[in-house]
Image (cartoon, rainbow, N blue to C red):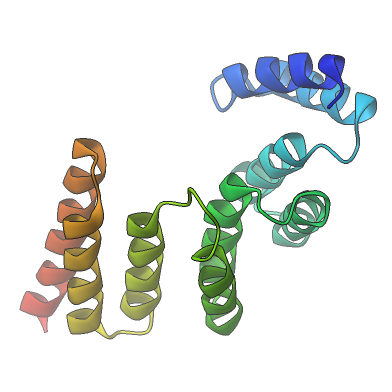
Length: 161
């Protein structure tokens, strides 16, 4: 990997999402030094998805990231979220199924993403079950707290029915 690309990627990551002007300058430098850098392409995909709401451009960057490193864990987390956001649940499930085979990927996060799909489809009981599995699978307190809050939010939807 190009060390200048790495340096600018780290600068971009440090600025994201707090100083988008500095972020854009650094990420563009990173990509100019190595247009195939999976980390930089993933981060640019996030920017397009989370700030510009340019979902087609985000997809382009996520695909480019994975075409250069099929096992790039961070890209799967965000590409799955992208697929859920655009309601392409079949694609999201395929991504989850493949990602589950990658060493080092957080299975609890994948369970959470499955729960999000169930929730968006209106299957709240299934979502709660998946969030419970995510809670029992994770080893991080911050994830446990987040999954519990997701579960509570879904339970409130059931109570409103």
